Image (tube, rainbow, N blue to C red; front, side, top):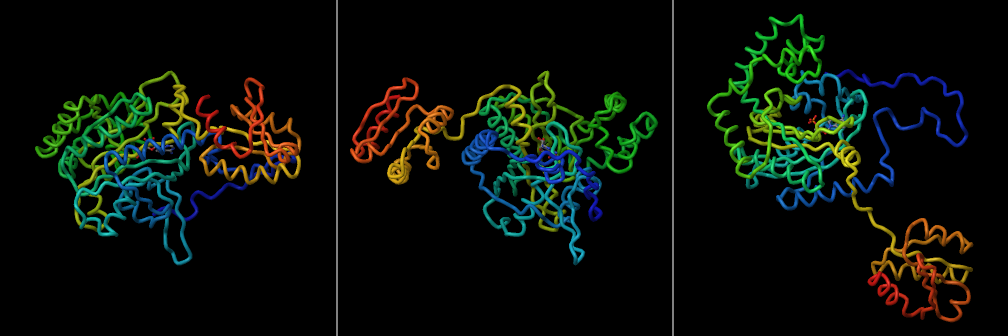
Length: 447
Ligand code: AMP
C-alpha cells in the first residue's frame, strides 16, 4: 500500500528577495503542475473538439468519473508491482484509515463505473470516452508532468480482434486529422497462460546476465520481468536484443487473435511496426498492446503520444464478471508539444469581430444595451466600457485586430446615429442607429 504522505512537500527555504508584485515561490504552482493560460487554451479547445467529433463519429458515449478513487482500485486494476502503483500515486489516508488516490490513469475507473452501474446488462460492447486530468508522482520534465490530461477511449464487453483494429483506426484517423504523423508500435502480450510460460523463459534468460543489468532491472527481474524489455539503459538494451520474444510463446488463441488484428489493419491500410519490446507499464493488459510514437523529429519529445491495448481480465480482477475489453489513452500535453514543435497552426478560439467604443456617460449607457443587442445577433463584440478616452479604446481595438469599430459619442446619441470605422482604412461612416445591426452584418459579410 502506498504510504500516507509520501509526497509531502519539502520544507521550503525562506524566499529572500521577494519582489513586491511577484507571488512568493511557496505559493506558486506545485512542481509538475501547470496553469493552462488563456493563450494556450486554443490548443485545448481544438483537441477537445476533435476528440468529441471522432467520439461522435464512432459512437462513443461520454463518461466522467471522480478524480479520487479507492487506492485499491488501482492496486488491483493497474497492478501492485507496477511503477504507477509502487511509486507514482498521490495517495491520502483519511481519518478512518480509508486509503484514496488521485487517479493515475482512466481505464480502471471506467471499468469500475461499467461494473458499478450495470452497463454489463446493456447491449455490448459499451463504448465510452473520457477526457480529464490524471496524476502521477513522477520526476517532472518536458512532456512529463504530475498532473496531465488524457483522452481515453474504451470498448467494454467485446473480445473480437476487430475491436482492437478499429481502436487503432480511430487513433490513426485522429492523428491524421490534427496533422501529426505517428508510428503505431504494436505487440501482443498474450493471455495469462502463455505469458506465464514466456515470463519463466525471460527470467531464466536475464538471470544468467543479471550482473549486466541496471539496478532497476535487477529489481524488475524479481518483480516485473517484462519491464526489462522496455528499459532505456544502454546496457539493458543490448541484452534485450537477444532476449526471447513473446510472439514465439503465444498460444494458438492469442496468436490467432493477433494475426486477425494485423490483417484488419492491413485491409484498412493502417501502417504499423511490430515491436516485441513493447510491454506497456500496466498489469491489466492482455493480448494486443500498442503505442503511438511521434515520427522522429530533431526535437526533444520522443515520448509516446498515447497507448493502449486489450484488457480482458480487468473486470474480473476488480471483482466483477469477466468481460473482454480494449481501449487507448492519448496524452494531450504531449500532443500539444508536438503540434507546437511542428508549427501546426490551430484556430483561435473565437476572434472578436467588432469593437464597441463609447464617449460620455449617455453613450456608455446606450452602448451597454447595444452590446446585448449585437450579442443576441451572434456578433462577437468586445468593449472597454470603463474607459473614458476614445484613443485608448481604439488602440485596444487595433491590438485585438478587429476589422470594424462602432463609435458612440454624445452627439451620435442625440442624433440617433452611430459611427462605424474601418480600422485598416481609417475611414468612418455615419449610420442610422436603428440600422446598426443590419449595417454591421453587411460589413462583416462583405469583409
Ligand atoms: P500510459 O497509459 O502510461 O502509457 O499513458 C498514456 C499516455 O499518457 C502516454 O502515452 C503519454 O502521452 C501520456 N502520459 C503518461 N504519463 C504522463 C505524464 N506524467 N505527463 C504527461 N503525459 C503523460
